[in-house]
Amino acid sequence: MSTTQTSEVQSNMTPDTALQLLKDGNRRFLENSRANRNLLEQVEATREGQWPFAVVLSCIDSRAPAELLFDLGIGDVFNARVAGNFVNRDILGSMEFGCKVAGAKLIVVMGHTHCGAVKGACDDVRLGNLTDMLAKLRPAVESVAEPADPAQRNSGNPEFVQLVSEKNVEMVLDAIREHSPVLQEMSEAGEIRLVGAMYDVQTGAVTFSD
Image (cartoon, one colour):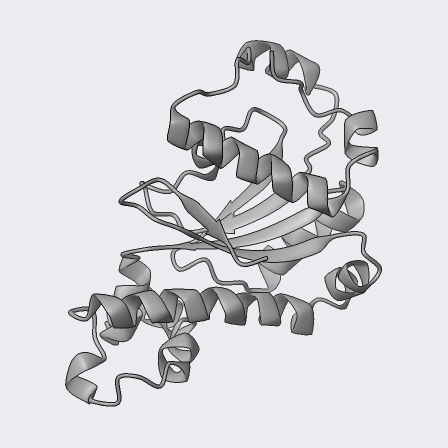
């Protein structure tokens, strides 16, 4: 039976063990050998408080639900989701709450293959509120140098889309460090780790950049 996160479990956890928990969970997911847990019991166990071990920032893509991919239960992680897995002040504030206030040991920024938001940014799609949202991903598009041929720098080039997705994860991690002195200080002190990851929607595997 999988253990529900408690204050004691969280306080004894390190950033490295938190990362290992996610790796082990994805391995179970790939092996279709999910941990035995009673979710209703976890609802009861966490009704007075929460002690998650990680914050996961991921895309809203319906194929990439973090709790399932990492075989997690109720109360295990904070899960922030937005198309293109970018950060803004609201998400940074949520991360600061998750780590500095609630005690999470790890922040994971997880992109994924065949990301629709990234494809939209590559094509410079303009549509309602999507225009401003996708503009947040344009720096990643512009930071990928190859291919130089403009005709190949679009969603029709899967290799280019993948490179942009990976670059976006890197740039989001940099943005967290730059725009959140709270999280940067915790990272430098070894209280938390910031890690990038990519989920493959074709295989179910998550690859970490640690």
